[in-house]
Length: 234
Ligand SMILES: Nc1ncnc2c1ncn2[C@@H]1O[C@H](COP(=O)(O)OP(=O)(O)OP(=O)(O)O)[C@@H](O)[C@H]1O
Ligand SMILES: [Mg+2]
Image (cartoon, rainbow, N blue to C red):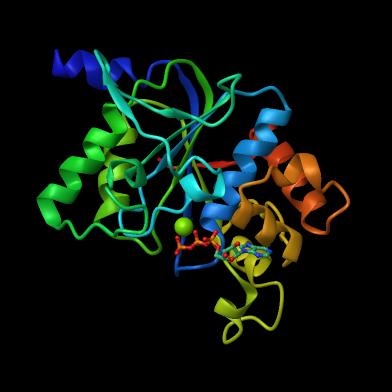
């Protein structure tokens, strides 16, 4: 029964994308959210798994922080962001009593929760599952990759800021880093106050701000993902 549930919930997913970064606050949750919204505009069905146990921010960015997940026979039913049910979200934020509460779980309990998160959500059919992770490479990442690896093609997006690399590279940190690691460079999203505002207020940036500086970059990144540019995690 457990085994059936573990594989069953992931069989309807075509591709899984992990969003990672070396340090915090560089825009992982922003990219995860905007990517989901952009993929929706291409008619794709997208799930978001927010495995940031300490600072889940996606429910707020998608304005669904007051919703709750509930149980069905196959596990948790994710929260649907829109009426058409094209974007679904599972976040630890939905399991907390107060939205700003942080979870201090350690070791085995944290691993068990992540494994449960990965296998126990009734996603149904999805074109993409975007997994927003905490900063760095911690237990959460190892548990997540271990739990996901057996099932689906697993790609990764690494988010970074130029400042993070100034000691190493004079400019274009992300592009240099990609060259160095021999992985495709997907693009550079400029700082854009309208994007910050959209995220704070839970608006659909892709729909509302097509003339904004971050828009072409986000669209280009999405197109590359649709074209299958992502480096697969082996
Ligand atoms: N291109 C951008 N233009 C303007 N603001 C941005 C941009 N990208 C991210 N931000 C803002 O920067 C802040 C941090 O972004 P975000 O929460 O996405 O980072 P994160 O990597 O997920 O952080 P954490 O490591 O804490 O999970 C947010 O307030 C977000 O609105
Ligand atoms: Mg985040």
